[in-house]
Amino acid sequence: MPKIPFSELATATYCPRKLYYQRRDDIEIPDLVTERRALAFEYDELLAADSADLTARPIAVSPGQLRSNLDLATDFDAWPELVSPSDRERLTEGKECRGIVHKVLDLETPVPSMIFTGAPPEHGVWEAQTVRTVAAAKALSWEHERMVERAFVEYPAYGVVREIRLGTRRKAAYRRAVRTARAIDGPPPRLNNRSKCEACEYRAECGVKTRSLRSLLGSLGG
Image (cartoon, rainbow, N blue to C red; front, side, top):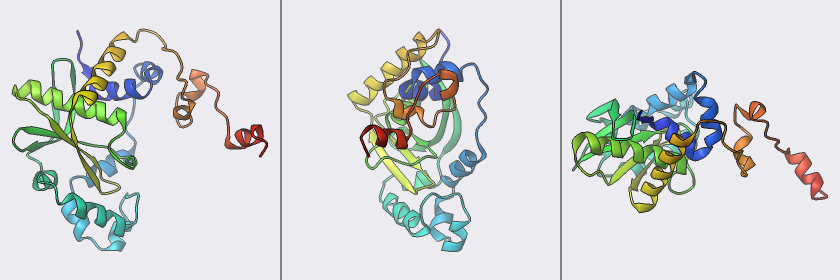
């Protein structure tokens, strides 16, 4: 059975119907994504840079906020490895999935750190990103024949780094994503949560109808 790419597991978690469409198309990585990922390998330089230099970089917060967030991240025991990982952009294959682990940290076990270029949630990690990170951890565990029970998630455009423990709930979400991705052989039902559809590039093709803020206010008598 073909191994499922990490990215497909994340999309299956977010919207199975979107994964159906993505599988037909060649997806190009936007330049901004590439530029923001590169920031995750320049933390020392970012901390030392002045505000003018930081403003010219593809960051999503003020220079002061970026430095403040990175200062918090320096408290992690893994900080030296996050700054200068033992391995980077490593293609890793597990029992069920395969993909690029952005950073492999040499700690008590090989620990993955995955880089995401969007905004972090107020606390924790978005579910689709959690699933992708668990997939990376499971692939490393399979390769090294060692348990991997923690991982890191980085939002470099915001200077935010978070550690997650790979407990039962997160592993269960991964298992659901595997089942969903394997089961897709035609367009899955549309989501009930239409808020996810607003920014989707397949919205028109999918045929989902979303409502503007103006129409929602009108229906409320505003």
